[in-house]
Amino acid sequence: MSFKYIFLSVAIAMALVVIVFIFHANRPQVEVQQPSADFVRAAGKCANCHRRETAAVVHQFEKSVHAKQGVSCLDCHQAVENQQERIHNGFTIAKHLTSKNCSGCHATEYHQFLRSRHAAPAWAAVAGGKDFTAVQIAFSEKYHKGAVDRPANRLAIAEGESAMSVGCMGCHDIGKPNADGSIGSCTDCHARHNTSVALAREPQTCGQCHMGPDHSQIEIYNESKHGVLYNAQKAHLNLSTPPKSLTTKDMPVPTCATCHLSGLDGLNVTHDTTERLSYWLFAAVSDKRPTYHQAQDAMKATCYKCHARTQVETFYKEAEGVVVDTNEKISEAQVLMDSLREEGLLTDTPFDEPIEFLYFDLWHYYGRTAKHGAFMGGADFVQWHGNYELLHKMAEIEKIAKELRNNAAKQ
Ligand code: HEC
Ligand code: HEC
Ligand code: HEC
Ligand code: HEC
Ligand code: HEC
Ligand code: HEC
Ligand code: HEC
Ligand code: HEC
Image (cartoon, rainbow, N blue to C red; front, side, top):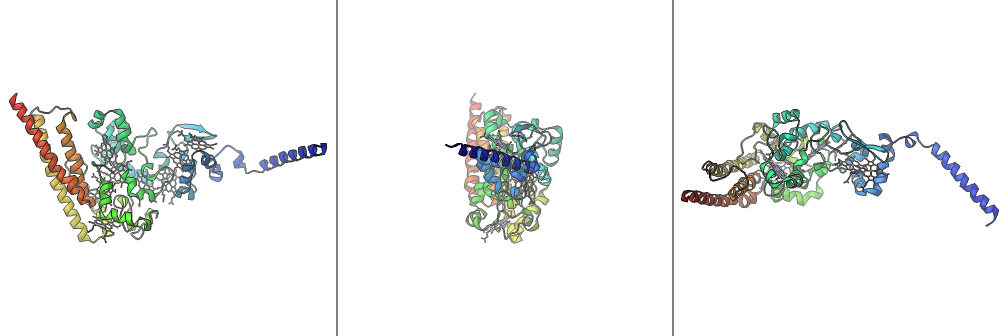
């Protein structure tokens, strides 16, 4: 190679270095300084790197309303008050995110959520009230007496630590008390990066937790006319319409969200899933809630958007009839169990004798299922998974009770 070519190469290389310097000096200030929220928004530095590292997160985020409205990665991932920070590739981000990373921009939804049983009561149903501050307990007691100020669940204790934390809390951590003083998680229904109303309106989103024999809402829904229509017509519904403008034209078929949260045709949207409930259906014997009348009016207002009043009144009358009859059947079993305990034929420890499991199945599975089936249109659940099993389990309970009494009489 001649000297001329070497000289030319060196000259070109030098020129390139100079060009790079000039180019760099002319870059916008925000890009050469320490990273800031504005920079993240402008340059998407998190997204650029994470497209290589965790691509799905970025793809999900890009489809969200947040991305379209200019909410950045750091808007959610920055540490807010009382959160631990950590340094991450030149950025300061929070160690863990909670509902507090949403409530700064969505205070209304957070405060409605706090009043619901999805907040503190959900966690306390398993772990009891010990993880909450006195102020948090006092707040919840105003809305749900005895739902947080209570001991840890005896069944959870009997099953042990890993059953509780991976099993029960897999659903009940929707109301987890967070170290930063907030309660719960918003992303169980909205997902972390997709964060949409469309996802939250999907029945299956609620069905992650509202399933199985003790709260078979998703199974009942899928059997109901509403569920059948939804599954058939889903492709023609506008599930992503913003809540404030949601009409029956967008969703002529209701999902769980429509009846329990949505603001159809101008009704109020609520994150307080308790607002429209008139009974404590989850209880062994279901009493009317103190808000019985307002709650029923609020739920019926939703039905009226799609149904004639006479139809809805008949439906409620029949469902309330199932509650009355189920209460009677469970009370009968309850009286029998109480008398066995008084006669000294059962220990005080729960879940150590077969008859206790039968009784638990009776109300917790079949009693609940009959009531839920009646209110959400699941005939098979009122009957075969409900009343038939009530009859069956009662016969077994009576048989064991008789044996216990006979054995005691022989001694
Ligand atoms: C230069 C590349 C790079 C940049 C820039 C970057 N990250 Fe990361 N991030 C990573 C890598 C690598 C991981 C680890 C992935 C793994 O464990 O597989 C990670 C992990 C994470 C995690 C999970 C941490 C955990 O332990 O659970 C979060 C959250 C995160 N990044 C958020 C962000 C946010 C928000 C930004 C922008 C403010 C950002 N990252 C910028 C490369 C980057
Ligand atoms: C709407 C708020 C929000 C936005 C916007 C957001 N994130 Fe997240 N992200 C979360 C939440 C909540 C978690 C769960 C964190 C936790 O459990 O501590 C999370 C978790 C993550 C994780 C860990 C995921 C895993 O499964 O390992 C990564 C990585 C991450 N985010 C990166 C990003 C990046 C990159 C962006 C922007 C492209 C972004 N996030 C935008 C809320 C958000
Ligand atoms: C698959 C999700 C899931 C799991 C796992 C789960 N639960 Fe639940 N639990 C729910 C749902 C949903 C309800 C609401 C039922 C209703 O209102 O009809 C509920 C209701 C309850 C209630 C009645 C409400 C209250 O505040 O008193 C108690 C108590 C309870 N669960 C305790 C437990 C315990 C203890 C465990 C573990 C041994 C557990 N749950 C496991 C989802 C779950
Ligand atoms: C039980 C499931 C569930 C939980 C938990 C939940 N959401 Fe929602 N959210 C929904 C549903 C369903 C909608 C859509 C309501 C409708 O159809 O009108 C919604 C709508 C929203 C909207 C849009 C409201 C509007 O009027 O435009 C925001 C913002 C929101 N949620 C934020 C949150 C925040 C913040 C949290 C946590 C404090 C949270 N959500 C927890 C189910 C949930
Ligand atoms: C920096 C402020 C900010 C933060 C933090 C934030 N959001 Fe949002 N969010 C917005 C804005 C702005 C919109 C669009 C509102 C609109 O169009 O009315 C939005 C819209 C939404 C919607 C409605 C989406 C739809 O499909 O219509 C949901 C749901 C939501 N946010 C949930 C969350 C959750 C959950 C978190 C926390 C993990 C969160 N947001 C964090 C600002 C924020
Ligand atoms: C992560 C799990 C989870 C998801 C997802 C979830 N829930 Fe729940 N839900 C629970 C638990 C746990 C309870 C019981 C709380 C208690 O009473 O202790 C509950 C209770 C309820 C109640 C009864 C409230 C009361 O006052 O008795 C309604 C109604 C409800 N959920 C509706 C919904 C709807 C609608 C959705 C979907 C938009 C949904 N839930 C999504 C876990 C979940
Ligand atoms: C057509 C409206 C409608 C649909 C759709 C619907 N529900 Fe319900 N749901 C009701 C009514 C009505 C009640 C009883 C209300 C009362 O107590 O007055 C109820 C009761 C409940 C309860 C019982 C709360 C308790 O006291 O134990 C839960 C939990 C629940 N629904 C969750 C769901 C879930 C999850 C879905 C979807 C899989 C769903 N619902 C679909 C109308 C509906
Ligand atoms: C968003 C509209 C919408 C809402 C809200 C709604 N429904 Fe429906 N419902 C329908 C549609 C559509 C059908 C199917 C009607 C048909 O066959 O033409 C249906 C069917 C029914 C059926 C079955 C009728 C039959 O004979 O097959 C009952 C019962 C019912 N709804 C009760 C209720 C109750 C009770 C509520 C309130 C708790 C309610 N619905 C809320 C749209 C709705």
